[in-house]
Length: 282
Length: 215
Image 1 (cartoon, helix red, strand yellow):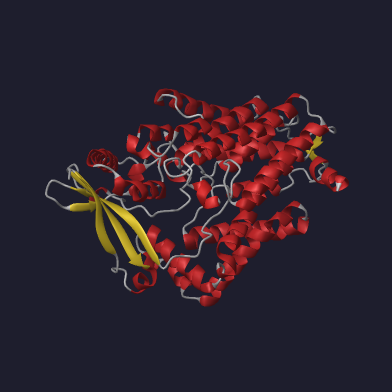
Image 2: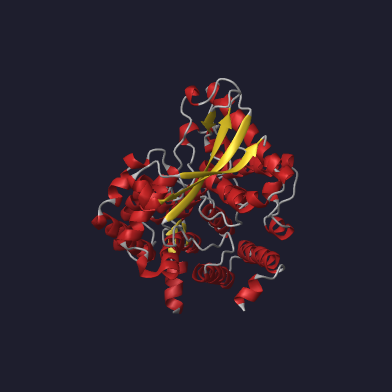
């Protein structure tokens, strides 16, 4: 057990892989915050919309500052993410970005839920904090020096957290709905209702066309569930990475086209690529 | 026992404080590693993150940023409900309002809040929400007419802006989709339908009023 723990978490990886992880996490977060222009303006929404957000919940996410200060902090988040992306004071930039993301990510959902887990900032918030704790997170060197290996645990931890998205999405389906979830009838109904709710002309959608093919609904249900539950194998097997990573991309494209569900963290799948295979064990 | 506990008014605030403590524990262990990256400290951080994230996943009780990752995990319902906002011009003509006017809020967030809270609001609070929607609709109309993005999310990145998790098709595409003159009133309607019936006939959607401003 101890040897396996050692091999999994503390095997060396190239510092380039850590640098790429920093770029991917900061880049994803920056894309999201640039796409949520003036997110702090949610604070100025009618008081009725905030009535369900109690004092403890405000304390949990460190809410309560005036709008002007929140807007300044949101601008600062952009700056820290750019610094993290470029590798300027990378650990400090990652730490500040992680804390600010923890504060701002719930703005997207807090009037309904304190759990903004499907809004794209969860893994960047956790991942940037993890990287900030690691001593080997530095600027990206195009040609790493001979001693530029580092313990893999920061990268491993982020990879594990990313795998949990898939695994627990599958697990949640099984514990909530059981083996009826992937059945053709259930998938068909999801195809219909999501296109009816989100599309202006559902009758012409690809989701509607696929809903009429029972074999395709069965394939989507069981195939999707299998991918979700098996995805953590990418942590242990190169063959699994070669098979499951492209399948995950197809899965997300299919979700977008058929179910109108977009996964903002799709680029983070590149965290599983070894960017310095000459020297890395990961 | 779980039912009795979940009815306690102190439970939700207590859980929020506990979740904050769980996050602060993560940061504290991480800072200890950053200060002195000894193997023992690193292992403690890893064990903490693994234990917390797996516990959250298995119990499906969130402690964001450690979360349950559940998505469309229930059985699909046979009946659905949604909502639409309509702006009224001075002639009384109704125009569908694009939900992008609510950005940075996603439509599903506003809709969930509205279904849960608006029916129980007193008249003055409903009027404030209605006024907010009218202002938003009118501001969006003006942006569309002047050639700007309808919602705020595209202000910096334009069409390259990250979409919301649930991708709603835009309603407003051209200035002809809105009146030339300002909206003077707004109304929200609840839409309800049977999924299979609507599959056969797109018009099989019932509408009932939820909010109108001015009333």
